[in-house]
Image (tube, rainbow, N blue to C red; front, top):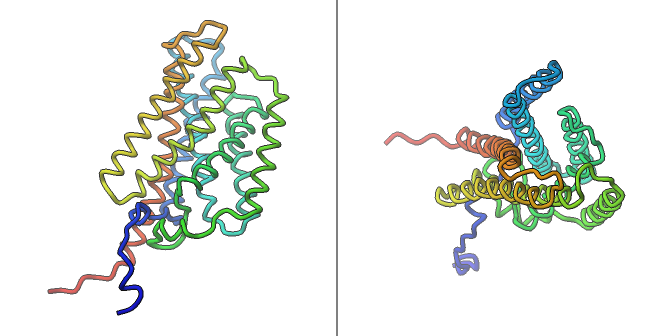
Length: 295
């Protein structure tokens, strides 16, 4: 009998969670989704720019489509920031996440929200908040390996002193910039939406990610339902907040569909990224599984 035989066989929650895998299938699925979203965004933008006027109903539908695509862009940015956890070299990982923030801001500008500072601050704050929340809640990092369990990944030291210093500097710079920023809407409305994106977004992403990576069926369904409920609650809450603070008299029934469209796009893109990583990991394990011997 060895010392290991005397240790209790304790199973933690993260023993049931695998890391998403970066491989041909995950990259291909995400790339296909990006192409489809890009075509839809270009078509919507071209349709709007090619017409000087259109019926109010069509205008509302196109605005909802645009906000859905904006939510998808936020979700894809969240997924790309998460995928960058696969990179082991610190400065390359930081540079990759900065490129994601800039690229997402460019996509938002292309969709008609021509406000570089606002888009960069929204994406930068989302990146900082997500990295912190994912660390605290032990969301598994991406891996190129097969069958890497999150329990092993969570024991690896993911945050170095340089991470803390860089995050502190970026946060200080972000707050300094937005403090002198002249918001395009009332400050109360702007900050309510911004804080909701920075906090609610990563929490929804956590639920979606674990919903695809956890091997327990009941846990998967519970987390999937939680992410949908958070999206509905977030969209409804933002609409109620806008009705309360907006000086133009926007009604809840007018604002709610657009916020819900944004949240819907956000959850859809998060689900695509998490599904792609989990699916690639599952296929890789199946390919390496030894064949069964004939009885």
